[in-house]
Image 1 (cartoon, rainbow, N blue to C red):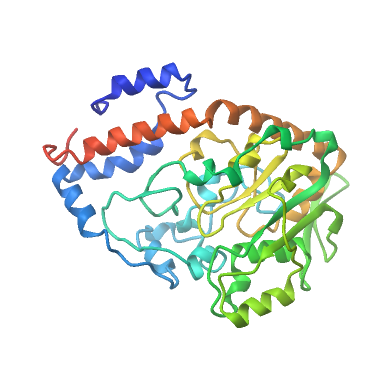
Image 2: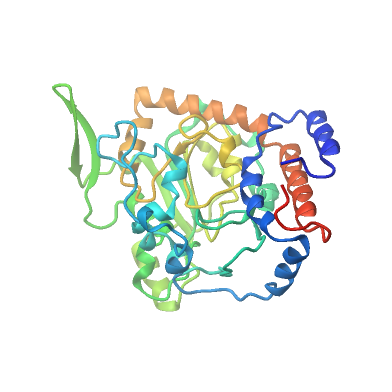
Length: 377
């Protein structure tokens, strides 16, 4: 397909600002291309008709997986590399694919009891900062990444050698609205429960003996390796707020730069994307990332190179933290931290987000051109 009107000016702008990516914007093309089947005037009419769509606070699984091919409603493919029975992420796109993971239905607050979820079906050009795999949203960089609260200030960071050899996370119980005991399955609550070793569950660790690696189950979790707590209990009816306060160990307040004192920093979805992610990528710490949402930057980041991916079940997390805090693992974690920081400084500048958004707007202008007929090639 021919570039959109205004492409030459965009290209010159991208080159002038030293964009590391010029000809690889598939994330935009893949989301725009389905709309070529309808005319520009039809696109505009569709937008106007759906402006007042109401939010949904009910489980949305059946709706968001309606488009899944029946043959894909199965368990995820076996990993192409040896994971020794633990769910290490080997393919990011497959990991967040709802069609391949029916178990996700009851493991993420957004799917169980969303706080804000306008459900729109059909071919509609929706712009969003994060979307589920089955949704066709046109993705753009979240303004949250530019908020002062999430800004990375190098002077606030410390050297790798000075950081605590542990995993850090602190935040609120966003991600879903608790109206019953289903909150126990929300993603943030599951994470904190695991990290605080609450309950009688067994953790999985890898142990090698006689040249064979096996999974060993244990109730032990080294609490010195986890500095994880909720700072606020909210988005819940009174009874279920009280239940969570009784279960979790909480912190009254956490400095916004406290995470930078740890070598491993966790990031997880809230009600939507996590605004702190870029701060962690830009830092001298190694980010561990769990998400179910697609973002504009997915093709720019390589798991296990720029960050450490974590599965939705988090079954592998105790083993992962134990490894990355070990003598050999610390070296690998430091490499990932440095690689992520270097690439972030080249491909995630404000200029890079501007270049991307500039291109999105050019494509949207062409898409909504009232003179554009359907099936433009």
